[in-house]
Length: 257
Figure 1 (cartoon, one colour):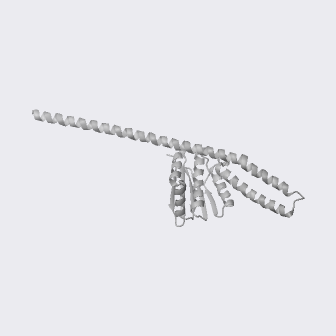
Figure 2 (cartoon, one colour):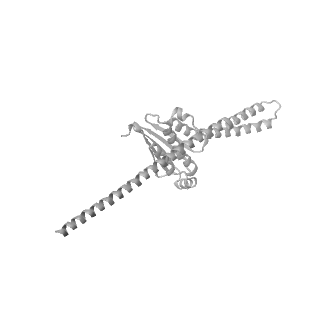
Figure 3 (tube, rainbow, N blue to C red):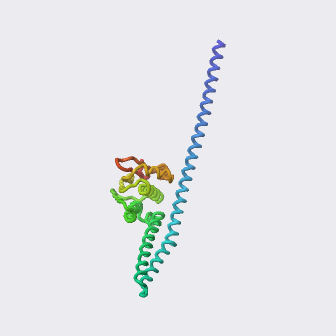
């Protein structure tokens, strides 16, 4: 009888010890998980602050270029135009000034394109759809390849930070295609629905060159995905028979179930 009681007390004690050990383990695990969640949130906030600071710096540089360099180039072109009208100027010198004016005009166009890429003022005024179309239109004039823009559905405006982030992601995709993939054709399609917007960018370039370029510059798909996560968007890419297809999707928060 006493032996049975002793065994019962021992089993109960062992069960209590096991329960306490399980509780302590679960508590420590929960603490670690909470700490990990806080650390992830902290990292997300740091990345978000970095993106906002970068955007502000881009705007500042763009404004400085517009106020200083672009104005200086425009003023120089005007001075050259007045100089070419001088009646005492020889025909050879007039031709030389005309060539210089042509080069200055080309330089001014490139500077204005850099300014626009850094700080597209129309993004806040006219929205993502217009700015992406305008970007394609600019590239048609400056690059020796074909870029096509297509849009379907009813355009919706989104929060400023969302439109800026989506624009920068698509801008990087297009720039990578131009610089590293040897693409000849780029197609951009925007699909607007009641619940989301989807942006597809397809090129006919070579994936190997793009991958090498992304490793060299450190601005690959992982970086775009991290920026997309900050606003609740997704970025995916998939190979196609010739080239690569990128898909950027953003679900409107107010309609998310």
